[in-house]
View 1 (cartoon, rainbow, N blue to C red):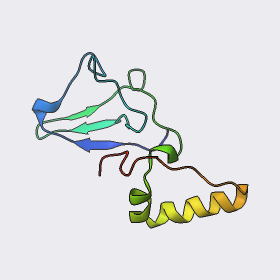
View 2 (cartoon, one colour; view 1 turned 30 degrees about the horizontal axis):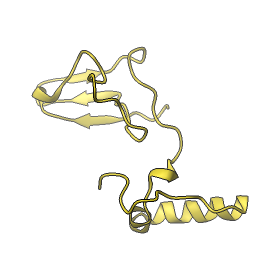
View 3 (tube, helix red, strand yellow; view 1 turned 180 degrees about the vertical axis):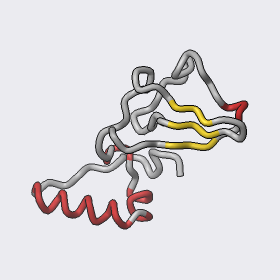
View 4 (cartoon, rainbow, N blue to C red; view 1 turned 180 degrees about the horizontal axis):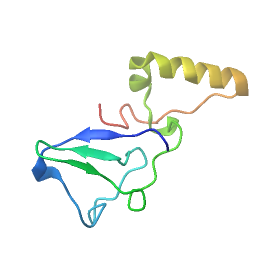
Amino acid sequence: ENTPVITTIHDCQVIEENLPPEGKPMMKHDVPVDIIVTPTRVIRVPRETRLPKPTGIYWDLLSRQKLGAIRILQKLKAKIEEGTGTEIELAKQDEALPP
């Protein structure tokens, strides 16, 4: 929650009302931003209007393919499984999240 999330976008992509847009809810893995930088301005999103950030890793959204490409997550998964004695279940489909 305390890690600042900053993104760059074009001015025409800024949405300042009705967040998230109606019919387009934030997904479980989406990360709200703290600061938005455009070619013409820097926007600091007020804490009181910012949506909550995700907590932890959503293993159930992570495919084996994606896990195979991210070594640190492989190590973390193995460490958690070793410590708990249970296998973490990954996403059922090949690619649950965008690349």
